[in-house]
Image (cartoon, rainbow, N blue to C red; front, top):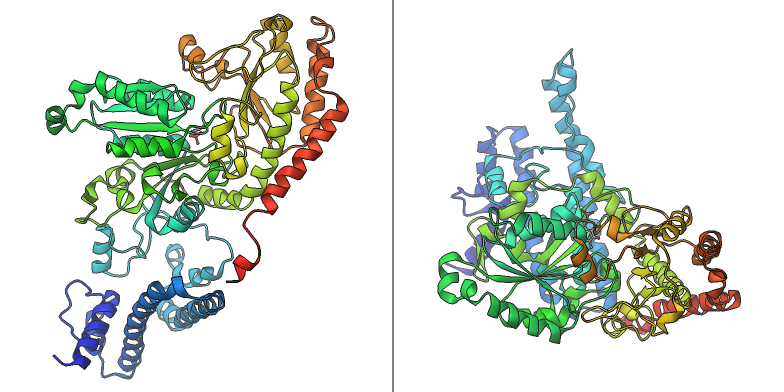
Length: 627
Ligand SMILES: Cc1ncc(COP(=O)(O)O)c(C=O)c1O
């Protein structure tokens, strides 16, 4: 075979993906591919019409082969290109997209006219006579992702659909429960945000709620009788899902082991203890028969105190023994923590979950969730096996495809819109968290469980792990009247004489709590624009019994505060006035024991300047952006 033939074969190989007979074609040249196409649709090549169609199709095949070449050159050279060249090549490709769309748009005239000539436009035919493909072409130019509200899609031809069912044709969607363009747009956006420079290695699946995402992930990973290490302070709904479903003997019989610590060292010890406790179940002989394994599920920052776990350290230890690590990073959002951007892959959790319902969407108007994982774990075409991982085990085929908890396009659009303002919202919340927690801690009667406060046992981990050392905008405060200690973290941040803390009766506390509206919202969620306050013992964590609540540092007077983007000084003023109204009559002078008004004003301004400086001075000099 001479060089020309080799090149022609290569061109045909790349071009045949466009053929209606892409899987069965015998064509070895573009001309043969084009002939086949015309024959497939019953077109006489020798007619004038046939010649026009032949010429068009032939050019499309060559274009497809050229696009493959463009892709190859791009992947080979992108890294070494200068910024100017990247700008030039980007815009050249963008213009090509418009040219291709223009061709498609020009095709609409002959296409539409032919279609109209087939339809009678009368009576019941009217509803059928609308063929959306014509109008959808210009939607390509929409500046925001298109909300694709459809259950089904128009097929190109049998072989393409066949490929689509095998997961081999990404352009060709079949059914919105499986793939939907708006949903995919969101999946791409969250992967870019979460995985940054490693985005090409990751994929995401979106779900109808955070709980649906977590359920899908656990369903994908857990097998009957497995052992699961779970960090203690998980969201109450997750506790319920694990306890009432996965752990039930007559369901999945998963053995739950609750990890109370936060550091890698504590985790290493706990993992050894867990392995020893379940040695029989996890023994090689046993696992060979039953496939039982140990996995790790952590939430960081965790509900309700907002403390962080050493995610990188824990992941590394778990990975050293081959265990899968799942992380619910809802409270961090990719702004505060980027667990998938660690250089050392062993330090990255295998899966990251977000409840979009919270900060990422931010409006409180939509429930949605996502699981992000390495591409080979999330999706492979039928029959493939990457890194020893079979296609049938991927989250798409194993769970997503069959369970149907997909996220519809309108909600996906809401989340995408919310994401655009995420960074600024988080920065405002960070300021509010620093200020409000310090204001509360200035009063002797409040135990403030918040890692934003310097010297807090969780502050060092927060400093080392979170972007700029920023805190989670969720914390708790209680009025127990005495210090409360926890196995690893003292829930009291300030060691003051116990005698100086009067015990607040339940009745007084409840009246005070009820007076916090409207500055503070009495709602159950977190991560919204408004500041939300609730009693976990009575709401989000009411699924836990009293002993489990106490282990998690939750008491009747515990208030969980989810900072919003409101003016924190107005919140403080309302808080002081509520104590005046309901606590001063039983404990005279209570409202006067906070820091003074000038101190609050000063704290506010200093914090705004410090956090803004951290934000605006990050990212290096403009010189790094020029090259
Ligand atoms: C940390 C965390 N994960 C998961 C969820 C569940 O998310 P959704 O309410 O979207 O189902 C919540 C809900 O509050 C949460 O706080």
